[in-house]
Length: 308
Image 1 (cartoon, rainbow, N blue to C red):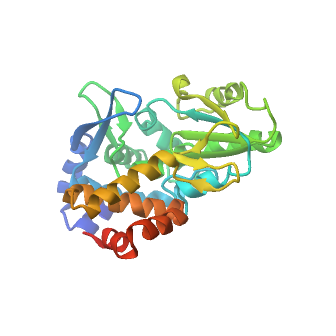
Image 2 (cartoon, rainbow, N blue to C red; image 1 turned 120 degrees about the vertical axis):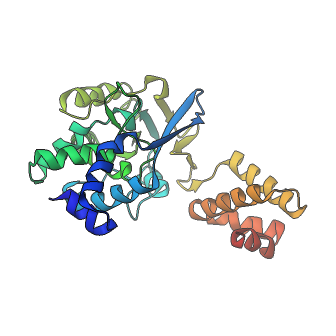
Image 3 (cartoon, one colour; image 1 turned 90 degrees about the vertical axis):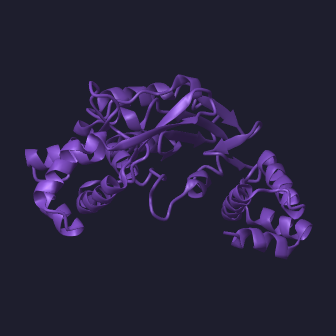
């Protein structure tokens, strides 16, 4: 695969210019920070507009060498957090695990292993270019890592975890446990009391056994829950009758915002956010949208959903 020629033809840039650009690609990121719910901040490294174009061009060319397991629900066409939660709605007991520093723990060698294993030509020069296009340098002295903000990172992260997903799914099938993964959020559920207690030890064993990627669980985010408490999967509440719900807190928040909208007390930015909340609510729990139409009027809800 002649990566230089592919990019040159797509962008109309001369090949020497493409080569120079790729050599500096790991430094073409803008960093900013978002607060975490658990405290601290999350670094987002956003590639430049030109680099994003190149990432999209090449990810399309290598996509056939990047397998995605059926247990992966994030960034997969036709899947969402709703489908992820629905997989668990008939189960009573839950275990939720989380990876530490997920994207930044994925290295160029992890992507190389997947590409080569799935039939990509073992061309060291092409692989070197791929490293530079998709991975960034946090500092001049640090190694290359996958960034959170690149459009190519979701597909790459799913692909490098394919072998992990295979082994975890096989184990769970034997044990009668439902398993799904939404990026770095792992959810396990079953109907046998006590079965999931300590089950994360099996996941740690698999992480140690697979050659790559080298990931660790975030013990602080390990959660056991059951039907008697509140079952949440990627933010969605599963009611006792197995129906998906936004949860009372989110419903009250959305209703309050709609009320403020009717009083013309929302800024344009807040209206835009409310539109997003309503679109999300419509996807997860459409009956809630109907109740809001009854409470505030069909015209009000439609006006919010159609706002720019």
